[in-house]
Image 1 (tube, rainbow, N blue to C red):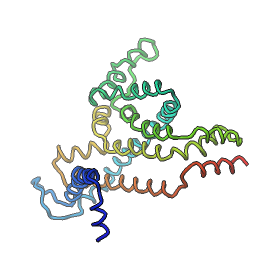
Image 2 (tube, rainbow, N blue to C red):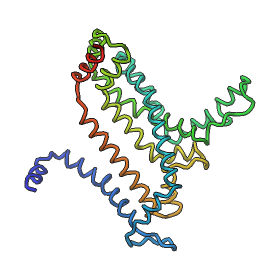
Image 3 (cartoon, rainbow, N blue to C red):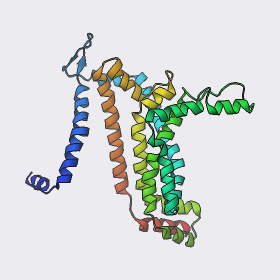
Image 4 (cartoon, helix red, strand yellow):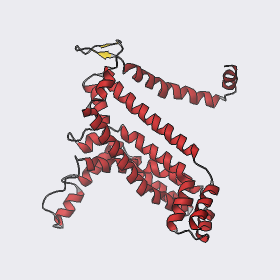
Length: 297
C-alpha cells in the first residue's frame, strides 16, 4: 500500500489530468450502467433497486443472441474489408514522397470535414433506388429495375466500411512508416519470395499497428446505431439499435444497461486477449529474419 501511495505521489500533473478524465468520462459512466443493469423495472415503468439477474437472463434469449451474432459477423466482415483496402493504402502512403503522403492523407480525411449524417446521406444519394449508380446502369440498359442496395445488410456494410476505413489506415501507416525497408531487401536476398517477405518480415513488424487499427474500427462498429438505422431501415436490426430503443423508446434502462454491459465486458476481454497475445509473441526484426531464413533453407 505504501509503495502504491509513493507511486501516486510521483505522478506528474499531466498523469493526474489523464486519470481524472479517464475516471470521470469512462470508468464512472460504465459503473453507473453496470449497476443499473441489476435494477428492476416494474410493470408500471418504475425503476427500483431490487437487485436481480433477470435482465441478463433476458439478454441471453435466442432473439437477442441472433442480433448479437448478426452484429458481430457484420462488424467482423466490415473490419476485414477495411483491412484489405486499408493496408495497401497505408503501404503506399508510407513509401510515398512527403508531398504525395500529405496529399494522400488529406484526401483520405476530406470526407470527415463534413457532418457525419451528411456523409451517410451522401451514400444514399449514390446507392439509393434513384441514386447516381442506379440511374447510370439503367441508362446504359444494364437493368430495367434499380438495384436494391440500401435498406439491406449490404447497405449497412458499405456504410461501415466507408466511414471507418480511415481509422484503420492511420495506425497501420504509422507502423509502416517506422518499418526498415532494408529488412525487406535482406529477405529477398535470402531467397524469400514476395509472399514470404510479406508474411514473415513485413507483417510481424507491423502487426501491432494492424491489431490497433482493427480494434479501432471493430469496437465502435459493434455499437453503431446511426449507420444501421439510416442505411439498414426497419428490416435490419442490430445491437446498437436494440440498446437505443430499450433506453429511449421502451424506457427499460435496466435491460438496456445489461445489453450495454455485456457488450462492453466482451470487448474489454477481447482487447485484453489481444494484448496478451501480442506480449507472448517475439518482437523485433530478429525473430522475423530468423523465420525467413528457416523458411528459405
